Image: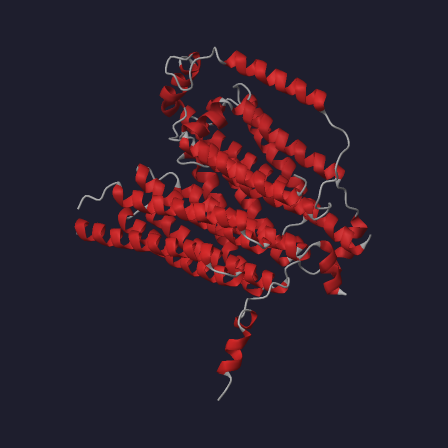
Length: 114
Length: 308
Length: 96
């Protein structure tokens, strides 16, 4: 039983860190603010959920489990709405998402031909 | 650096870094307080102030080179003086010989709570903590006297001013869900301070942060219906009175000022009761002062908006 | 399998790398909102980092700090957004 818990925790922790890492890579390399927000917020939630669940399996019953659950709920709720609020504020202040037409007009013309 | 907003952000990051330094030094209570006060409430209050002043600092023509020279010289002399002191954390330094072992050894017997930091803060050095609470109270009074808002402004503004972030519907729903959790967590930190990191200061700050969140999203007029400004202003004084009142009650019951042993039939229970009441007083004052400061800044913004 | 400390060290290191990348984006980001996003990401990763380090050290005393920091991160981001989006002049124009 201990071994099973350990293995599952390993898997959860490693996959959670993997998600966090890919989110950071997206934050680094994506071309536009809105795409970066998408990368950051989705992987934030996934990574946080997996890592905290992995830690919860290691914690055993007690106050620590309750606190980790609280952190998980709060983190899920808060970071998602914060990213939403940021995107809304950015849209409102005039920042426009980058569209395909900006870079390659010729592509659009060729694709609209029947 | 003349962009005041960048300065505020950098000071927030600096507070966070010093909180992690305290964590590294194994001082969990201090890190807790530094993180919540420095990185949280200070940034919020600075941002509330920045709404009232221009964003960029004007260039000053006065160059204080003489003052800078004096400060550098004094600093260098002080550092030279400290080179003679024992190394950081050395076991046979005088500070570790007399007072600290007594606190660490006798705290469990005399006070009976596991968290030694709280027992030192509230019981062994309770008089200092009374002074700290008075300092916070004085700061609150100072701001109140500088930022008086007339009653006419208040009554007129209460009807007209909509919330700042009115169309952020998702944010408002989520904040409404989280607010009870935040307030209960503040109460948990307050009363769990005997057993883990926590205590009055941190709890007051967290409570105030919850109320400030609500005020930012729902507007001052809605918040006033629940938490009136006058009530909060009086609560700032009430916390300090509670603290000093416990001390005077101890004197009336025969002991010294803030000598909790006489509060109950049994010294350890007396200590527990004394620490509980005293931390409650600290928490009430800190929360009330932070909320009052934020309310005052927001009232001023409202007053600017409606030119009264 | 005695993972022991290694189970916590790997996520901790990876989280540190992520925080470094977020800081880099905070310096570089062309627009203001990039920087706010980077600071928010830094904050959430710090919460996870504190939780993992807490398990590494064996004492569960740091979790309270993680909760407080999650709260502070959230409220600070909202405060910053309020400051930028709704400074007094633009709000006045909106209401009239």
